[in-house]
Amino acid sequence: MNESRFNDFQSMVVLIDADNTQLAKLEGMLHEISAYGRIIVKKAYGNWKKQILAKWEDEIKRLAIKAEQQFDYVSGKNTTDIAMVIDAMDLLHTGRYDAVVLVSSDSDFTPLAVRLREDGIYVIGVGEKKTPEAFRNACDDFIYLEYIQSSEPRKKEKSVKKGTKGRKGADEGQKEESAKEEKDDDIASGIDEIHVLLRIANGKYQDEDGFTNVSAAGTYIKRVKPEFNSYAYGFAKLSDLLRAYPERYEMRKVPTNGNASVVMYRCK
Image 1 (cartoon, rainbow, N blue to C red):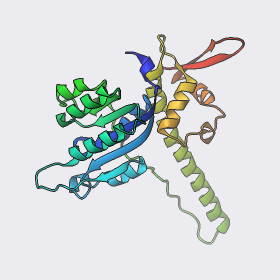
Image 2 (cartoon, rainbow, N blue to C red; image 1 turned 45 degrees about the vertical axis):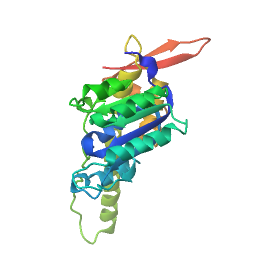
Image 3 (cartoon, one colour; image 1 turned 30 degrees about the vertical axis):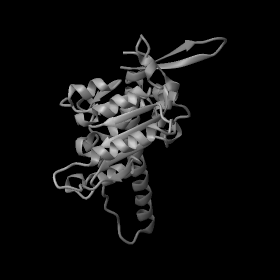
Image 4 (tube, helix red, strand yellow; image 1 turned 90 degrees about the vertical axis):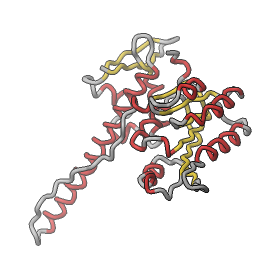
């Protein structure tokens, strides 16, 4: 695998066929795609009035994906494909984008992938293993949904403690303790996600020895999680966070020109 292709694209488009995509894989898929570069357009297409797509609303809002409504003008006919193709061609002719991601297992997108490549656009397909070979071969790269981890809602368990009525000081103390516990839960939940992203980055950007530049990993995490700041987890730098988990990461410094050095890490 040529690792240089990652981190190259600055203007990526992601077009999602909601009728042919697993909702549980949506966030993990965006994590995977972000390793290729900066996503600036994210659109999902479907007839959102359908009961089968009812659970999509909260997730596409959370992931900042623009929902494109497409009615079924004729019963039994899916018009989502045509809407995606029209949008893709409109985006192509602006000349602003260097990569297009087509998320679907439908072979109907094969001609679109071929046309985009003819214009020099890098095409990434995302779909299930059942995706027809013609569509897979029409893409520059293809990602199987089966290899992407499903995301499940995180449920926080809050401990309920009994207080003593009439004791304002005790009640206030319990509130403060409860708030602290909730904050600690949030940090623990958040750090788990960072560990997942660090492992993905290590898999994508590693050198021949399996080490990844911490700076490259930080750039990737910011793409996936724009609000990321190591201070939120109690560390001044991402490298400090990595060093705090020696059971997870192996660290090393690589000297560069002059007295400078690059901090690298490898997952254990």
